[in-house]
Image 1 (cartoon, rainbow, N blue to C red):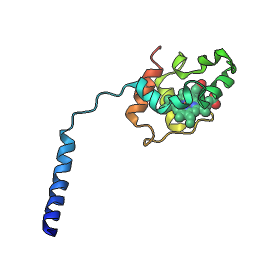
Image 2: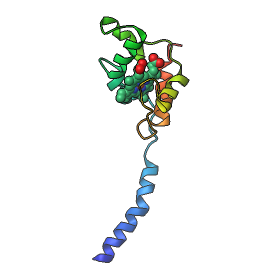
Image 3: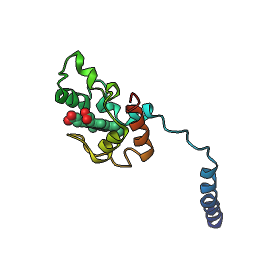
Image 4: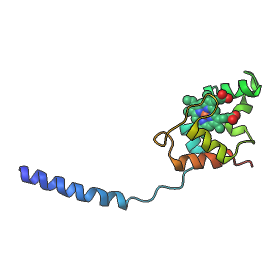
Length: 116
Ligand code: HEC
């Protein structure tokens, strides 16, 4: 009984990495989806990032606040966005690779700089 369990465990340990190798490669990161997932809570409607950017840029708390959405800005470069993520900017804390992977950060940078 004990041996069977050990054998099964051993097979599992050998089989698991093989199974994960067989998985199809994940599709290239969708910057818009990654933004919605990682940044949207603060940088879309009424998020604390939107409120802070709007106040700093003088858009106020009225209907002009949509101009503070990062997705509506046309002055952001991909490098600046990645730097904001990794190093923090103004009152935004840096986000680690656990929170936002390098692939996500790069895709989000390209997405926000898309109008350039
Ligand atoms: C916990 C809330 C929060 C999250 C999550 C967040 N931010 Fe921010 N972000 C802020 C705040 C607050 C500021 C500072 C705004 C200010 O003081 O002007 C800011 C500022 C920024 C700025 C600077 C804007 C400017 O006008 O120069 C960029 C760029 C930015 N964030 C990108 C991102 C990206 C990309 C993500 C997702 C990976 C993200 N942020 C996630 C809260 C957040």
